[in-house]
Image (cartoon, rainbow, N blue to C red; front, side, top):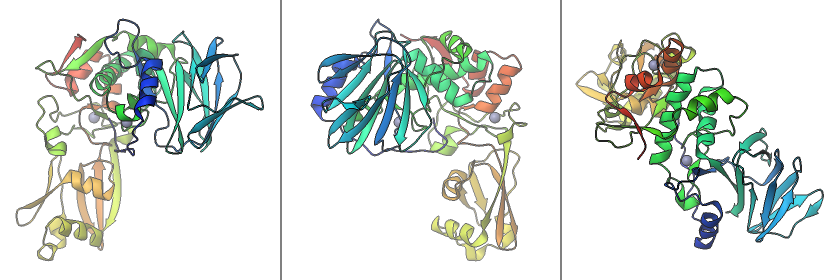
Length: 391
Ligand SMILES: [Zn+2]
Ligand SMILES: [Zn+2]
């Protein structure tokens, strides 16, 4: 789901702790009839040392060493670690150290605030429950949250608060499809998904914007599948620049519903164009690393212009290098760009932002503004895919 790929260090939980978490959180029951909950690893790229939690709803309880302790609304709880143990401090008093602490509420709409103090980060509001433990010297924070509340939260993090309902619906279908297909992604670390773009960006509750939850809720239970009925790879990106990329050109996998489509909707958006300069020497050095004999190419040989998105950067002598490799190496916004040479510099002028596969978010925002439905948006970017009620 990401523009950039971050692979976190694998952490393997001991079996007993996994067992406790499973018992406590019950999140390994995807087909249960009760409201679905998911467990999200918060601030997954941070080494959390100190944090503050404050219930915003009455009725929360702390679970410490098997005992429940009432926590009033507005109470500040500070958490730090000592070895493998968690220390919870409340109004200057410390509780007995615990391996695992949970903040629980029976109402999935109950909310708490979480502030990272070391390292510091903005305060965020979350729905549901919180589970804490220490793992390799960092405090792990897991948010056990109602699935639909999570989906609305991701929709907010991904497209902001100003989009049209049909866009939130389209986005929710893709977020849910991703969740269904990737519930086990962080299983070894003790949760379902992380809150980073490695999985799906999630910055807490969308409850401040009830219209987002209303829109995403209208797609509850629905996912996007391919012609065979399998969940699609529900990818999206910021801006395709006017033409999406095929999975074949970027990932080298033929996927019938991830073909390149011309997108007239995103061309006027902010992210549609970019420029970057690279030194000619660096350009040559990279091409050499790909087996190109640059001594046989003069400067005009590097020029490239295309009105359509292409998979390969073709050079004289029948040699070609994938645009995705150039994008990755030179950290370019997209893999669709023209190449010009000026003296010792290579001038790149590109279109779009992101890998370009699947739904173009800025194009989809515009489609919704023009009155297109969520189904029309999905069908435009994922040709031949179908929206179905989950089994
Ligand atoms: Zn992840
Ligand atoms: Zn686009």
